[in-house]
Length: 302
Image 1 (tube, rainbow, N blue to C red):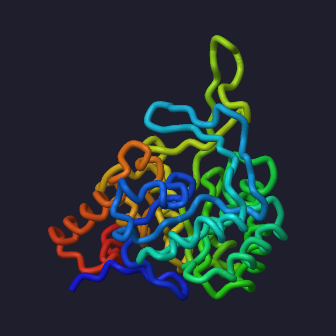
Image 2: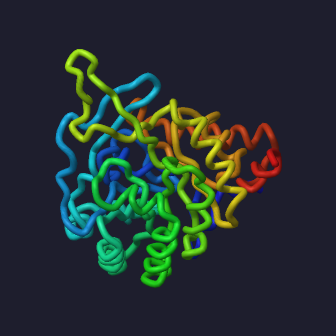
Image 3: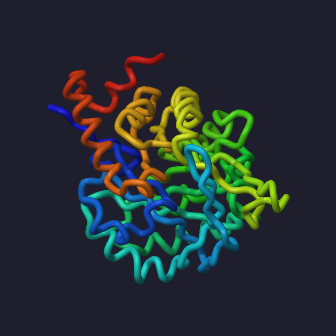
């Protein structure tokens, strides 16, 4: 009998397919476009202590095989998230994971402490890897000492599953991964966006007011798969693969590389039904290959 559930810390994901933070709003935006109960997890838009307007426009640019975004963690803040967004989300059978961001360690801790009062929240994804903000974000994600200290501090504030989202914009991602694991992370999301830049050759200036942004979409999938492969062999906790998943084959590559679950992000902008198609495709692949669990994917590539 097949079992697609994945244990992460004290929680269990019903299946390995989730939707990535920042690409799926707060879930309700997609309720008429996708069968939300079939998802394994919804990773919410970033939640910060205070509301954030985000960066100046334009904030999204199309590039060959991807998009460059500089949203800047725009969100309604933790209080409105609790009052207006979370109640509808927690009624769903899938796991609801709050993506937590901040400018300081104190802000991260304050957001988690506030969210701990909520009923029905499955766990947290700690965003220490956003390249689109001037304070916090990537600054935390590139320093293993800060990662370990922050993770340990948050670990002491919750018994819920704690997932740290890693940046690819480092020399050796396994060093950062081990630091998060040492701090008490239950799983690692791998990867956030790649740092990118587009210049208007006629105007002779960057297209994004913030100059650089985060590259996502099919172009980053080979990087995400390679880093998932490295990280999954460097740590003992589960790895969640993210980056450029547009179809079931893309997700299966992540699972074969060592991921225990995946997140679909930019693909939902093109086709909101991609996460469900990915889940169906994984199930069909397992039927054909006679795989009984997600762990069976990890036996092929050493």
